[in-house]
Image (cartoon, rainbow, N blue to C red; front, side, top):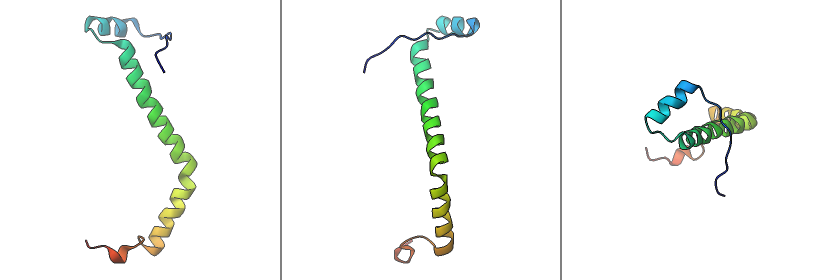
Length: 73
């Protein structure tokens, strides 16, 4: 897809510290955004699917694990 330029505002001390350490702020910001997006997608998925998860947990609590009789451990 390629790369795009975006504007990002940082605390001056944070930016200076990163520059002094030779850190690539663009790559660090990108990695942090990727991680935050994954966490938020997972949260939204859990929220949307919570009723099904709860129903399945109740079924397992009542009836046990499917095929449990065939487990060898």
